[in-house]
Every structure is written in C-alpha cells, then in structure tokens.
Amino acid sequence: MPKPSTKSVYSLLLANYTPIFLIVGIFLCGISTIIPWELLAHIVRDAGIAALIGIYLMWTLEQVNKLRVQQEVHEFIETVGESFIQAVYGRELPPELFDVIRKSLFNQSFIYTAHHTDLIIQDFNDASIAAAPPGVRKLLESFREHTKNTSLSAENLIILRISTYVEVKNVSQTTAEYPLKFQTPKPFGGNYEGLCGITSVRIDGQEQLATEVYNRDADPETNPTLLEFSRNALVAPGATVKVSTEAYSLRRNDDAEQLRPRFPAKGVNLSVMDSDGNKDIVISLNAPLLEGTETFAVKNEKTNKAKFSVAQYLLPYQSVEVIWTPKRREKEQQPSLQPELPSAGT
Image (cartoon, rainbow, N blue to C red; front, side):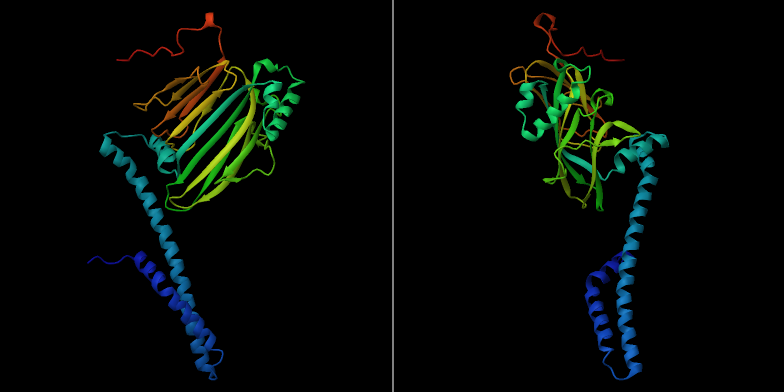
C-alpha cells in the first residue's frame, strides 16, 4: 500500500479537522476566562491557543507545499522538455530555440478559444458621418475638423471600424491575470493627432470605458504611434473571459490591417465589409506551416464582403492581413486577383 504524501496528509487534516480544531480552540480560550483556579485557567487557555496555532501552521504548510510542488513540476518540465523533443522527434534543438518555444507555448497561461474580427470600410464624407450613431458621429465629426488644417484629402480617406470579440481561457492550474491590451495604431505614422479613437471595451459584457471615446497613447515617449487601453482581469483555472472591443480611425483608401493574436488562437474568423462597394479587398494568411487551410480570400462582389476563417490554431503573432485598394476601372482590371503561386522547390 503506497505511503500517503505529506501534501495529502496536510490536505486531509485541513479538510476534516479544521472545524474541530477551530471550535475546540475558541471554546478553550473562552472557558479559561471563567475558571476560578489560575493554574488550570492558564493550562486551558494555552491549549486553546495551541489548537488555533495548529490550524494556522497546517494551512501555512499546505500553501508552502503547494508552491513547492508547482515549482518542482515547472523545473521538471524545463529539464526534460529538450530531451523529450530529441527522443520523440529525433531533433536536437539549440537551447535558445527551445527557450523561444517554451516562452511562446509552454509558459502561456491563456489561449483564445474564439477570435472574431469585423472590419467595416466606408468612404469619408458627410453622408457617412451623418449616418453614424450619435456617439460615433461626434468622433467622426472631430476627424473632419482635424483634417481641415492638413494636406489630407477626404476623397483619399476611408473610415475604418474595427470590432473584435474573443473568448480567453485560462489553461493553467492557478488563477491568473489576463492582460487585456487593446491597441489601435494612429494613422499616418502618428503625424496627425485626433484621427482615431477606441469607443468600446467590454469584459464579460461590462463596459470598461468611462467616456465615449478613449484616446490615450500607449506610451508617449517610447510608443507614441499607438492608442492603447489596458486592464487586467483575474481568471480562475479552466475559466473563460469574454472580451469585445470597438475602435474607429481614418485611413488611406489604399492601406492594410494585420490581425496578430497574442496567444495561441483557435477559431480565428475575419470579415471585411466594403460599405460603398468601391474597393478591392484581399485577405491573406501569414502562417505557411498550416496544412489543409485556405490562405487567400477576396471580396464577394454580390455582398461586398470578404470572409476568412482558420479552423486550426494560430501560434502567437502569426497573422492574417487585409489589404484594400480603390476598385480599378474595368479596362485596368486583371483577369484574377489570385497571385501566382511559386513553383515547388526541389
């Protein structure tokens, strides 16, 4: 019969005997105050205090033991990880390469179990501003004011609306902080202020923005070309948090946007709507090692929408790219937007 571990003994004592020790300790400490014999009163009180101290010591030892076991498991994984890959796959990876794999995969506490992004492209004109919801209309009107004293021409600009919805699961064995970090780049390299804004951030349905528009720099000194909203959310082991975001910005009418998940992501879906029907849209996947996955999509001319999805997992910072350009005249159009595929190497 196997000998019970120290960890299981502590856990058993805490689970089954804590209430008894607690009741006995409080009872003895209380009754010691009414015992008329001083020596006996001291003995009873000390016994009660000892029972309470015993509870504290058992709890402390349990926590220390739990941390020690977790550290041992972590060190064991790091120690055998390289040997395991070498034994199973017959590959001896350099320690620096294995360190990259460990940080990008094995050390991750979170994965995306759902990842949806919707882009809407609209011409930047009075009609599109007037048709926007009140809160967004105010933001778009500020865009218009900020462009008056610049060399930017409205006919060469579009309004880009970016909406995201993700489900983030904690795959570790402890409660962890999910570092929500929603960023949107300032258009035109940040040379013009006031041309983008974050309009919504929701965590499990609860709006996080205190104002209609959030437009704080990620870091004015080191990264002045990004707006960023950041907040940590505690997620229990195995639990999932749902996050949705929305942002608007002015962009050139021939530009691109990249989607790069920060954690391993399954179920990546992207849709791009061309509201005015005057753009060519191409979506491409920058993850060449995924087999059996479409890597290219174009806009459906009947619906003015391009859709793209990846059923497999994307690794952190593998990307999906969207490129939009003004629709070419019929005589300038090529037979197909499908690029030539390179010939197979030998």
